[in-house]
Image (cartoon, rainbow, N blue to C red):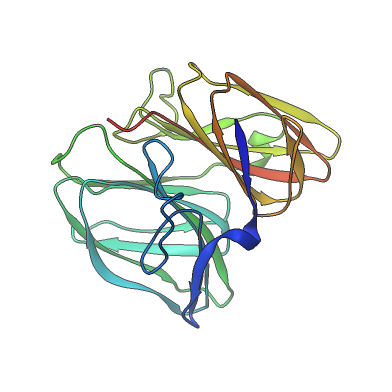
Length: 236
């Protein structure tokens, strides 16, 4: 089963400094059919104006992955971590027993991010944060695991969930396959840019696709395309 979730169908809110689109219920956007997808709880497509951002606020028991599409985001938290993550790179915050953090666009240009939340396998662990560069050239024609709590993904940023977040770029006319370990896994794929077909389902720029009951997917790019994919378990 593959369900296209067009960008135009997403919930969202425009706060002036922040134009947010929500693939799942979030804040004031509520949709009983889009609360989560397995252990994937949130996928926000955020556009953040220069010299603005999210002031300090608290989280607990959530794996929060930030994929920077354009610009850069500067993170600071109550653990003493501070870092700047720029386009193509990824940061992960494991909120664990609780952490306060801020995320600001301190650049002179607009920043665009995907923020992805995955429910952890366990609760109450010590919070942590990390970031890592993932050059887009290294992802040409193949998936690279960006964040993972699954075996064999040691080069990825660690998360505390039996899930992985992957990125790839595909040139127009080329195809890329991905295999799920079991058909009961939950996949969610978003085009960061471009257009493609997913097992024959046409997707446009910033569309999402909810995947379940599939063991293999094939993405064929109709123009140069950048992809982010989450492979998540069912809810515990």
